[in-house]
Image (cartoon, rainbow over all chains, first blue to last red; front, side):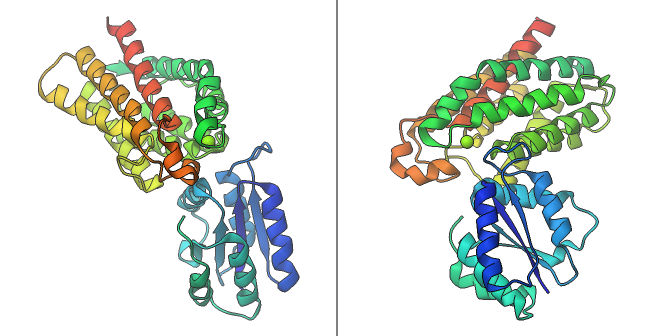
Length: 127
Length: 213
Ligand SMILES: [Mg+2]
């Protein structure tokens, strides 16, 4: 089953989105990387690497992010990771709340990472 | 200009000190059009940089710059972490295990840094970002080197060009980062990243002037 990683500037947002998505799809593995390592608002490349590692399986990992630097740090985290098959980790440029819920539901019914990405196209936003 | 690793390390320490002195200024600039954390984030990052390289003997410039990069990536928190982190990483990769650098090397390192920033941030000139001070500065440096100005003149011209680019960010509508949510209202404000980038280039020039002058 595809797992999710939620990357947000705020730990509370990340936790809340995970909570919402698990309501719909309790069996899906959802890891979060919210805020900086020292509790500030922001994103943290090392937190994101840990979340991806914890979420990783050969079925794939879907990363959802909130604002600009969350994307940059997610891409940088992937650049640094050498112990996983990066072709199985995808970043979705969609609305984070809707994307997380829809993504979790799709994952829970056994869709592949590419099918999930396809399904999330309707929540795509410019970011 | 031929700087060795120890001299580069001292310049990095000066940059950290300068960032700390400008912490409130950079934060105020960011508060006007962003989330008001640029100065604090950069200061945190560069304090971590000092910690990470204080025992480095400077023998391997590339390795030292990679340490700077990792400290920034791990400790800044805002968008400037991955951006400056990428800049120092790319410069470090280019310089490799050279034990000293010439002005031409410096140009090449800056060019690598710029290309890294543009790729990481999907940014180009005219978007009210650090690219607006860095890119014209690098172009000016190239022209000055080609015209055989002496090294300090080259660096001074580069800094002047960075300053013009930085000042021009006032006239640009932000389309990148948090400031983009303000749209037209971002006009009239400097971009904090363009300012910190200018201040870093200026500090490098001033320190090289002290070493060589
Ligand atoms: Mg900021």
